Amino acid sequence: MSSATMSISQTPTFSSTAPANAATPVQAVAAAPVAPAAPAAPVAKRSELRERLKNIARIVLPPLIGLALLIAIWEVVAIKTQGIPTPAKTWSAAVVLFSDPFYSNGPNDQGIGWNILSSLKRVGIGFGFAALVGIPVGFMLGRFKFMGSMLDPIISLLRPVSPLAWLPIGLLVFKKADPAATWTIFICSIWPMILNTAQGVQRIPSDYMNVARVLNLSEFKILTKILFPAVLPYMLTGIRLSIGTAWLVIVAAEMLTGGVGIGFWVWDEWNNLKVEHIVIAIFVIGIVGLLLELTLLQIAKRFSYASN
Image 1 (cartoon, one colour):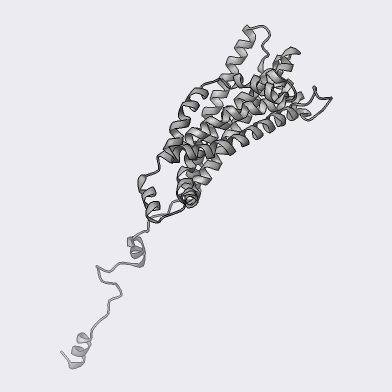
Image 2 (cartoon, rainbow, N blue to C red; image 1 turned 60 degrees about the horizontal axis):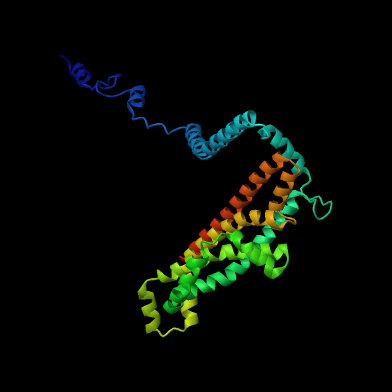
């Protein structure tokens, strides 16, 4: 073999095909790991919306079912009992009544709005005087054992007396119906404030008072820096109980004293044989009492957070 032939045969050759174990571009793409798909935003939003609707349903549905049950029982009783208005008739009367709640045709013929405001005014005055007297007395009863022992029998004797039993005393002293009703509110509102405030003072840890003695704090500083912040939750509980009692009593007191007020309005509508108006007044009294209670609850929460 010639040398030229030998050189050609020994020249390295290059294959046009790739090695057997090399991956093609398509295979490389196919073999690459695929990242997990992120949850779709619309699906997450729908899930969150469903959860929110479930929470709303848990809050709203039970009261609605309760009201529907009450209306159904009311409808059955109205059908079976002569003289009781049906829910539909009462609703129609309420629409007419609240279309002009602040009309005035003289002292004995005023809209339901004026009657509610008059009752709230009496409650506010009587309740305010009860707070001004009851809360300081409660502090003194809890702070000084001698005073607590002295006044405990008097409070135990007078507290169970029905508030309306005090109404004739008010009429005798004040000679007028309006201050007599306010006096009745005062006397029925004062007991929860006194007892709850005194209980709060008595439950203050003794360590607090020992520190006050060591620091030689004045009685004013003990009251403002130790007693008042610690007793505030008890005091607000007494106020809440008092406002509920006051709103209950004012209706009965106004029925007996007359004048302008929701209690007198109920009695007047009974004399006029407008039973549907009496049913409306029952709902109005309940709603106003509930709003007063909720307002004081919110105030109590806010002051509790502030005291903490």
